[in-house]
Amino acid sequence: MAFFLTKPLNIPLGHSVNDVRQKLLKLLCLKDRELESFRLHRQSVDARNKSDVHFVCSYVVETNANPANATAYEVPQDVLLNVTKTGEKLNCIVVGAGPAGLFAALYLAKSGCAVTVVERGSDVEKRQAKVNEFFNGGELDEHTNVQFGLGGAGTFSDGKLTTGISSPLTYTVFQQLVRSGAPQDILTSALPHVGTDKLVNVVANLRDEIVSCGGKFLFDTSVTDFIVENNAVKGVVLDCGENLLADCVLLACGNGARDIYTCLNRYDALTFKPFAVGLRIEHTREFINTAQYGRVFATHRDLPTASYKLVGNFDTHSCYSFCMCPGGVVVAASSERDSVVVNGMSNYLRDGDNSNSALVVNVTADDVNRYGYGSDALAGMRFQQDMERRAYAKAGGNYLAPCQNVTDFIAGTLSTQFDVAPSYPRGVTSVNLRELLPKDIGDTLAQALTYFDRKIVGFGSSGVLTGVETRTSSPVRITRNEAYQSKLARLYPVGEGAGYAGGIVSSAVDGLRVAKAVLLSLNS
Image (cartoon, rainbow, N blue to C red):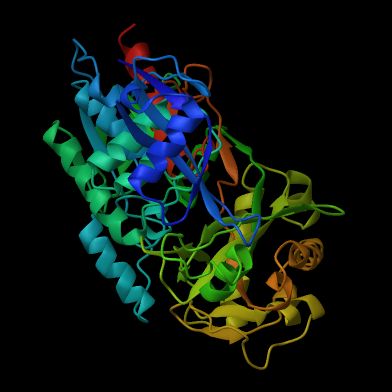
C-alpha cells in the first residue's frame, strides 16, 4: 500500500464519513475496493458564497492503485522522536520558558545535555493565580503576569498556531503539542488554535517532559547580566547574586524583556527592528459570525466561531488585523507598573460574547526618530514604554484602559456610552484615543477602519477600541550569525523576543533550529 495526498475537495456541512468516501472515489477515479483508508489532512471553511458555506478538505489516502488528482505522500520526520544522544554531557542554560525556550530545552534535554531553564515568572499554576488576581483588581506582579511565566505570553492568548513559515520542523511542533495535551484538531485545521484553558496544561506537560529528561527549572528567577570572558558568554548572573556557569546560553526571552535588551545594548549586540502598534477592536461574536458566514449559516453547529484577517496599505503606513481572538476577551497585559498594555485571549471553545483583534500600524526607525525617541537600538522600546505609560495616565490609573467607540475614534470625539460592552477585565475609561497616538498612526487607523468597513460591512461603523496594543513583536533584533550565535560567542538568541519569530509555532521552530545548531557547534 502507498499513501497519497489529494487535491482540495469541497465537502458540505453536516457530511457523513460515507459522503466523504464517495466524493474521494469520484475525485481519485478509484473503485470502492481500491480505497483502503483515508484520513483528513487539512480542513478550511469557504464562506465566500453566503448561500453555500462549505468545507474545503484534503485527505491522505491509502491505496495500491494509481489515483488521479493526488500526489505521493510521505510522513514528515518528527525530530523530537529521533534525537541523537550527544557523547559529551554539555551544560546549557535556557533563559525564558516560552515556546522557543521550552522546545529548545526539550531537544537539548533529550540529547543528553544538562539543561537549566531560567524563567523570571512563576510556574503555570502559580502564574495563573497571579494573573487572575490582577484581572480581578489586585496588584500587578512585574515578574509574573500575562507576559512572563511558564509558557510565555502565548499562554494567555488564543493559542493560535497559524504561521507563515514553511520549515519542516513545524510538523514536529504540532506533533509535540498534541503529545502534550493539545487537541487533535490542530493537526488538520487550516486555522489551528489551542485556547488558554488548554494551553496551561500543555505547557505544564512540556515542563514535566523536560524534567523527566533531566532538565531543571528555576522559576521566579531573573537574569541580570551575562558572564563574559574573551568575548564569549560563560554563564549568567541571577538576581539572587548567584553566578550560573554553562557551556552555552540560549536567550529565549519574550519581547517584553526590556531589562535584557538594556543589558545587551552595553555589548552592542542589538539593532532596531520594525514593529507595529495600535488598538484592540471588539465586536459582538454574533456580528462577526453573521458578517463572515451570512445569516443562514451564522449559527451552524459544524462551523467554528468566525475569524477574519484584514490588511490595507495607506498614504504613509500599512494597517492590519493581528492576533484575532474569536469569541474572546481583551486582557490586561501590563508587565510594568503604571502602564497599560492590552492583548487578546480566548478559550478553546471561543464562546465568549465578543470577538476581538488588534488593529496595528507598522512603525519604522524613521517613524520613531521623527516622534522624538532617537535613532539608537532602544528607540522603539522607549516609544512603546511611553505609549503604555500615557495610556495608564490618560485612563485615570489603577490599570483602567482607555476606550472609545469606533465611530467616535474616526470622528475624534469622546464616547458617552459604548456600542459594545468592553471585555477588558480591569475596567475602561472613555478617552479620545487619537490623543494617545502619533497623528499619522491615528490617521492611518481611521483610514483603515473606513476601508475595512467595505470588506466587512459594519466593521468600521460599530464596535469599540481599547488601547494600547504595543507588544506585537520585539522592537529590537539581537544580532546572530549563520551559526546562530550573537556577537558574544556561545550566546544564542532565540525566538520572538530575539527578533526571529512571530508567534507560538515560529518561536518553537526557532527553538528547535537553534538547539540543533548548538549541538553541532559544541560537538564540532
